[in-house]
Amino acid sequence: MSPDATPPELVITAPQPGATVTTRTFRFEGTTEPGCTVTAAGRYAADVDTQGNWSIVLVINPGSNLATFVATDQAGNTNTATIAVNYQSPGQADGTVLIAHEQGVYQVDPDGDVSTLVEGEVAAAVDDTRGGLLVQTHKGRNWEDEEDWSTVIWWVPKGGSSPQRLLVPDPGTDHELTLHDTYRTDTGFVVVYTRHEGYTPFEHPPTMHDRLRTYNVETGSIEELYRVRGYEWSLEQVSAGNGLVTATEYQMNGRGCILVDDRGEIVTRPGIPTSPDCLVGGKFDCPHSCSLCSDGNRAAYIDPGQPGAADNDVILVRSTATGEGLARVTIPIDRAELPAYLDALSIEGSFLVANRHIDHAYGLDNFLEALLFDLDNPGAAGHELPISGRARLVETPVDIAITVAISDQ
View 1 (cartoon, rainbow, N blue to C red):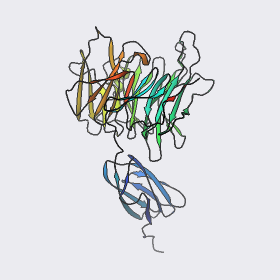
View 2 (cartoon, one colour):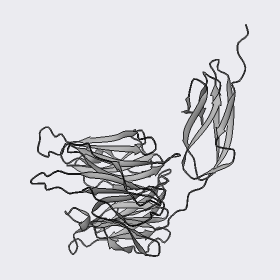
View 3 (cartoon, one colour):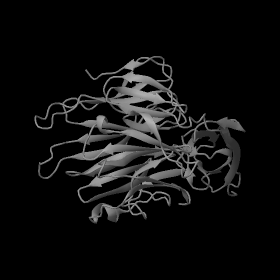
View 4 (tube, helix red, strand yellow):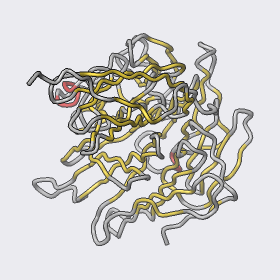
C-alpha cells in the first residue's frame, strides 16, 4: 500500500477575503480534515476540534495584513491557505481625557469642554474602548479601627444609563479591587485589575497579596497574570496594550517596571525598561510609572536616571518594537515650593498626560490638575487640565445617555 501523499483540505471561513476589521486582535476560523494540525505564521497553533473546525486569535497590524495558515495531516502532508485582512483603527479621540474626582467622573474633550459622566465618590475610571465607561467605587477605610472596606467595579455600556456591577469582592473577606485598564478583543473587551488580599500589615509572616488579573467580559473568565506578596509590596500604575500589560512594582527597597503578556509570562521589549535588580538591589532610581498606548506600539515612563532629573521630572517615550526614543518631556519641579511629584502617566495617540500628586498624601483630593502634552509639538509646555483629579486619555470618547449616579451603599 503506497503511503498517503494527498495534501489535506484547508479552508478559511472567516473573515471574508479583503475584510476590514477594527480590532487589533481578530479570530480567524476555518475547516480542515479531522486529525490535522493548523498553524499560523509557522509557529502559532490553532485550536482544532474532532470535526476539523479550527480557530485562532491573531494580532494584526494597521493597514493590509496577509495571514498564512498551514494544515498538516498525520502523514506529514501539508496544505497552505492565505487571506488578506485590513485593520482600520476606530476613530481616535485625540486629547480626550477622563478625570476621576472625589465627587464624580468628568470628560474633557480636545476643545477643553467639560461634561459630567458620573456623580458620586469614585476611585478610578476608564473607558471600555467602545464608548462605555468603567468606574470603581469605594466607601473608604478607617485604618485605626479597621472598618469594613468595599470596592466594586461598575460598567455603563455605550448609550446606557444604568450601571451594572461587573466585579465585586468576595463577600466576607478583606479583599479589595483596583481598576486599572481595558483592552479590546474580537468579541468584546477585557478588564485589567488588581485584587488585594489579607491587608494585615504587621502579621508575620505577611499575608498580603496583590494579584494582577484580567476579566473577559464576553466569556466571564478570569486569568491571573502576576502576584506580589509581602508588607509594602504592591502593584500600581498598570496599563495594557496589544497583548502586553505593564505595571510599577513597589517594594520596601525600590520600585521598577514589570512587563507580562496576556498569559502572565514575563517578557522584555526594548522600549520598556525592566530591571529585576532595581526591585531587590536597594535602588530607588529605577524607571517607573510605565504606560502603554492601547496599540502597544509606544511606552512612556519616568526615568530619574536621566541627565537633569535631579531638578526635573523626565518622561521618555519609546517605541516598544525598536526601543527608539520618540519623545522626551522635561518638567521642572520646585519641590521646596510645592512638594508634588509626577506619576500615573497615560499615553494615547500623540498625546501624553502626566498626573501630579501632593507628596506623601493619598486619595483623589490630593491629585492636582494634570498636564496634557501634544507629542507632535516637542518642547511645548504642558496644558493644565481644568479639573483636578486623576486624569487618563481615552481610546474612544465615552458616550452614555445621562449623568449616572453610582454608590456602593
